[in-house]
Length: 359
Ligand SMILES: [Zn+2]
Image (cartoon, rainbow, N blue to C red):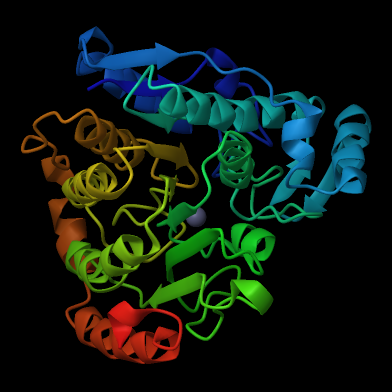
């Protein structure tokens, strides 16, 4: 069972500013940690370099006018929003991130590897058809999904566990019943969308599933939602492949968010998604990095845990630095789980006309 890690030094190139939360240290520290743990010496881990996505691959998701805007702004410099500048040369780096996701999809379909994790920057899940935002330019996960479908995979499950709602991905697939989009995210929070009554429209009604959770939600909350919502839906939907928009900004040490997951919690969650993929879609699973801004204390350990789980390695040694344990205890909200149990009941009722597992 081989896990591919899609990464190249080009993923360290994009930078809005050295102090921006989405800076290249995010991956520099992660790669240091993976090397220190000897992950790349393991026979079940394969490092795969990225390539740029083609125009055809990008235009399967994004409007031509938006791609032209990104290309032109990459020459002149530009701005999407206060947090999302377009530095010179952006388009080349954004195409490499999207192309990494496409390579991962190809390798999983071709069975050169069992599953893949794309350690890319910039992230993508806030990018819609004709807009970027929230540090995102091209929607890497959506581009991978359309590529998987072009290669014959009919139904795709996207699990977006980034702390922020994947508004761009939701918009792209909102009317599409071939893609089941499930998002767990802190709410209320940026970007403001992702309430339980946003369930898709037209033919896609019932195929968008939002699980908003309160600040302080811990590993227990995410385990509950996997068991109660994601796994039953996946078993009924029977996807041909699972794509995880893996944002690691739910970690309790993340400076931008207010959730309370641990690195072990992330590893366990990915382990369960792997078991799910093995049971319903021959193990086909592509993970794509989204957010995660605790560059030293969180992201290297969560990414390590996720990759170890995907490769079927022992995750019992995945743990936080001792110096952070006090912060963990202060971050967890004891009342979050009871709020989430209530929200889950309401969500099942809203989805019950579309899914027999909730009747
Ligand atoms: Zn995020």
